[in-house]
Image (spheres, rainbow, N blue to C red):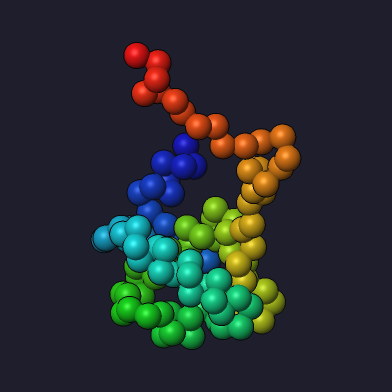
Length: 109
């Protein structure tokens, strides 16, 4: 039931009020915000990060993306309010026993 509530509304971490979302962010906007957080890793606070984005984004849209990244544990906020990127998945393809297999479907006819 909790995931349904998150799909309908988001929780602003600062005042803990539930607000309805007017517009959902596009994928390119989410990727732009992720890239900016990776670029300024641990240097900027929330408002300064919003101001330093390459394209203008409505603050409400930025807050939706920010709350999503916090909820999915891709970013963290330290005691000073600075934002850091913490999502580094394991790259399983770098293991010695795993490799890319060539699909040879042309010769099987």
